[in-house]
Length: 197
Image (tube, rainbow, N blue to C red; front, top):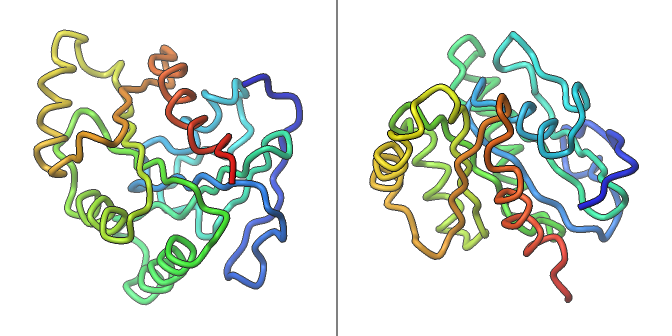
């Protein structure tokens, strides 16, 4: 995808603030510090487009990033960050759930997991939630540069087993550090971005 114009359309707290467009949306979900902003920046070939933060749990709204008026990437708040109050977490959870289940523009969700570790309970719940609502999902295993290439298959198998992965879904091994998996990620994304209604 040849990208020219990128902008943050809005950071929305509720459906009243969602952009009124008919362009497709791809949501990005994952626990805090899994590398969502780095994933966005890397596949768009921009250094600091999506704000990365040394402070996990910083994204508290739905950030709608407009890519060439062709697609919105929607960065949803990271989950599983303990320092946020239970009440705040519940509020985010409701906001995310409402967006994922009610937004007609949503075409697919990129579910990011850390390749080094077995998926967390939250990762598994997110995957099960997406499967239950029949929302197309692309699992992206980030931080691949942190383990030896020879161990990728073993870690992929561990993640797929924990998620009870559906073999019809896309699985991409990714690293924002050495750019592994960019073309595979785009290939998976484009099948949802360029769907003819």
